[in-house]
Length: 200
Image (cartoon, rainbow, N blue to C red; front, top):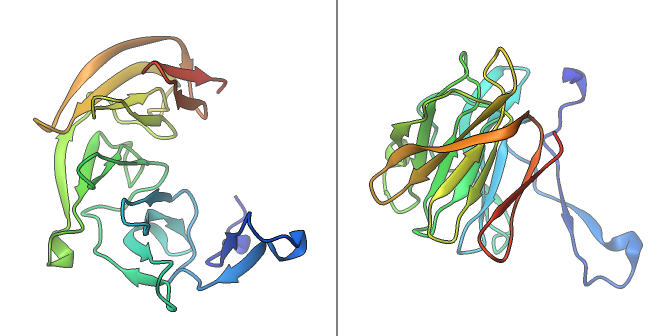
């Protein structure tokens, strides 16, 4: 990545705009440049952008985009640790689970963001640890509310391991091994509840 080209700008796509030249528009910028961050659509239509990296190093800040406000972005509490190349998954409860990532280590840690906590500094709480630290993995919300984390990179090699997070007891458990080690793959939830991993 060329650090000279990191962006804080934000663009909005409107598929209902009949003029293709006008379908993309600039909206308010992020408070800082970011790469390898996450963006999660919440139940109320806002978007939570979390962590990442920039010229200043690994980031622990989070910002919220509200499409109903003229000034779209606001700060919303910092993560306990900096992270990038993590995953962020919206849970049925409306909380957001981040898993893995890199912030001075290939972390096994996972955190849950709770927007209903009034104190911004307390909105992120740790929620168990995976068996393996990983980056560039996938995280998929399953129909029963669990989150499947699969593959990734642990600093030495691509991974075959997979783990499940259960938000009811805040615990991680093994979910079997992939047939092939994968990093930078995709994961898609199919209508029957199975998860399709492709490429990598």
